[in-house]
Amino acid sequence: MAREAGAFEARVIEAATVAVAPWVRWKCQYGCPGYGQSLCCPPHSPRPEETAAVLRCYRHGVLLLAEQSWLVRYLVGQLEQAAFKAGFYKAFGLGAGPCGLCEKCTLTGPCRRPAEARPAMEACGIDVFQTVRNNGLELPVAREPGQPCARVGLVLVE
Image: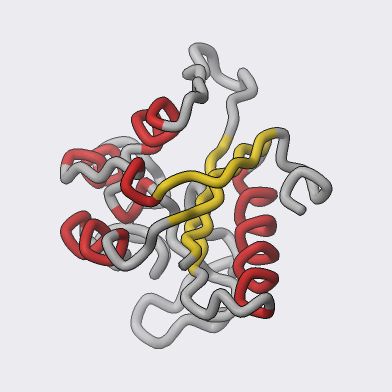
């Protein structure tokens, strides 16, 4: 389903292969202009220790790669919903990059689009590069501005 909708790679993985590390959120804080601008980004997103605890509640996930963050967020939402309707009631998706659903996030109140908004993997402390490697894939780094690079999403399924 993910490939049909635009992912260039999608595979079922073991949840235990998802790498979590506390340093990852620092990369958001010291390098991403989206830091603190959305309820889906640090410091509002789940902390690495919470993420590790939640991952222990799952056995599998679908790791997907697409060309743009917005497409990953869309695909993750669609897969999460399809998995839920198929009886996987614990299905939960994690996107890529800052949320971007609203022009300006309401940081002082509840999310205006909670059915669609999902934190990015990295916002929750997931080491995306190591997770991809743990599952037999490579994720090249964009070395020049504007150079295309894959974006990664994950739908946890139990």
